[in-house]
Image (cartoon, rainbow, N blue to C red; front, side):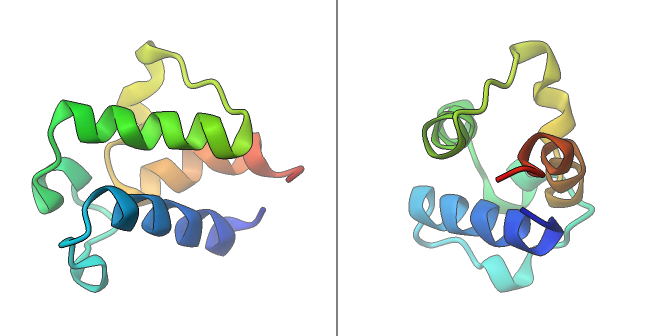
Amino acid sequence: MNRDDIKDALLEIIGDIDEEADLDALDADKPLRDQLDLDSMDFLDIVMELRKRYKLQIPEDEYPELITLNSCIKYLEPKLREI
């Protein structure tokens, strides 16, 4: 997967979790939780969906890497490169 594929996948997952989210208005450099009013369960749903779709294990101590859309892409790119 390339960066655009990862971004599209993340936006799809977020849209499935928060159907009212205005994904077009997202600032890729601002915290997702602040922009989308995600609670901790929503965040865990995103992590679990990444695990389910891509067999990707994200250790809890690496969750801070998933704060913004851009940081998510940067973190996931090497892990999803072969998909």
